[in-house]
Length: 292
Length: 296
View 1 (cartoon, rainbow over the protein chains, first blue to last red):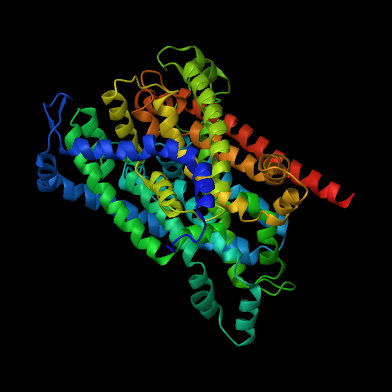
View 2: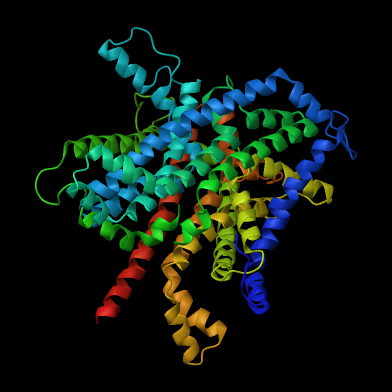
């Protein structure tokens, strides 16, 4: 970032305005992260008691465990699948709203229709798949009635499929909004010029719309990836306990008071997440993106 | 991502006046494909939710799946009277109170931070990335850290101290990002004019900025309330002995296998919809009043 050219007086004013924000983030974001970092180096008596000290035992344990690799592979699988589906659906929903809906009020209305569930409970939206996907759920009932299957499908609920469905259901909105935002800024004259110059629909998509929506895609990706990688709830409930992710294993560790191991695994996960997010941030200046 | 709510009217206008498709005459085939996709998306978005709302109105024979068994309010009564479903009423009260406190703090702090970030100052990038970090950090990990911190300091974790702070670490980044979008549309000329007319800094904020930015501040409040009211991962290790509503729902998903669970879903969604409706309604009202006074 460029150095601030402002004189010291505006430095002081700036810090005064953001000081309440900093006063919340330091004790409730920076300090907890440091506590977890410290706990990962502590020894434990196995009953929740922590002995201050410096040992890498927890990291050795986490890194040597065959389970760790399995957990990361499972988490990456869920992240990639969710990312692909939310990106495809989010991109085309945003594209439809920006380029195909001619009536402005209708576009606003349809956009709000997509965003309203974001402000309702995630947990409730997740359990709402039970009456649909269950063994006696609507989808099985319908398929049985049509004669497509003769026995209810059991893979629909409490499976990896159900986990991905729940993620896509909850997180597509995080793709739609930023992509919509960057698409809405594309100057329509550019596209008309491309049509006049004989560009095909595919060329317009490839050479204009996709490159100019990049920042929205990057923002949406940050949201989706960080939420899926940090989630344990959807994995736990929708897989029926059959699958685990890094954070759901963390939750189990905390449940049995294995704080140092849990903390070490959390630190590793945070490092992976920071690496991914900073890679994405290299391609887009989100601060400028948001204020523009 | 939040930019859009406060921004809609201006942003959409140029997008839709001239679509890729010629604005008169037949639609290209892609329109029908995408319209179908959009329709399916909306059905998948709302369909499951409506299923549980419908199923929560079964009578005492009701189960977790279709077909409906009778119609009654049995499971709603059950929800608020039965002990085995837990302390729903108490957690409901706590969640509403907590959400109101979070909303007030989020609006004030985000507004001030929005003012601060308008000009560059030394260290602004650091504060900005601290905020982004707080947004993307795994909630459960932050919650555990906060819980351990309170334990180490000898403080009791409770919903109005540790959980309040943990939720703010989630709602404030959203609030400030919404403020960024709102501030980017604020014309500095109005503020300059206020100073030229002899207004103090406080007067220009109170008499010029707050009224002009009112719709955006309502949007920040909407984010603050709903994100707190539905927050789960960060509260889990920080709420202490008394549950908030999402924690209550979580324990119900593990123990309760009756339509009581769906009834709770219906009740909490009704509250969400009231809040969303009131917020969007007041934004529209403010814009409308502004539009008519500008013309008149």
